[in-house]
Length: 207
Image (cartoon, rainbow, N blue to C red; front, side, top):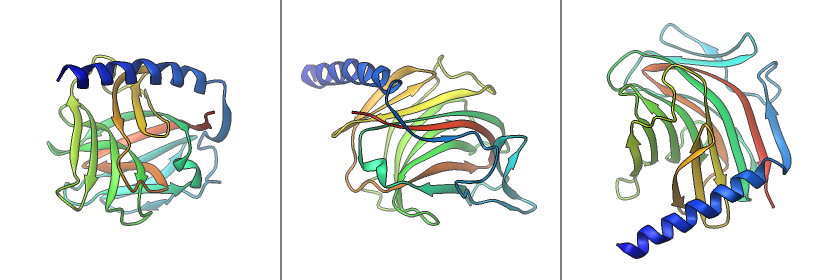
């Protein structure tokens, strides 16, 4: 028990230093949503939509049994990178609402394995590994976090090295996990019975 806590403490300190160094490293992608040059999936329907609106990315979904997601591909997700994006949960349409980021998904249209990093209708910050295989699915973090400002833009960040992923909210680290096996190369946004607005997506390659 003590060894596990010590390992997590060392990991948090090390990856916090690593995150600060990322700010100086090579910018791979900067998405301000002025155009759709990165080919995000856009569509409109009565119950769901995904679109660029006033220079921001907006997604909505009024169903609790169907996800609305939009992912793009990067072969650099296997390297040491920093992913940072500003996200605001505008509203939740039901008690099961959730919204945020999909990271390291294994398929663009129908992912079966991915990391979810976002918020839910209970105003909890959530980090989980979602999988169609129940033996692999796992919730790493699910609780209210004072660093996460409700109904405001929050900066979500994920920082990777060879074996670990550090997660931060508004530049404050809250958990580090070992990299799950078989991570995919797709990342983007997901909404379930909710609406989000996103802006300023940046991906940096770290040494």
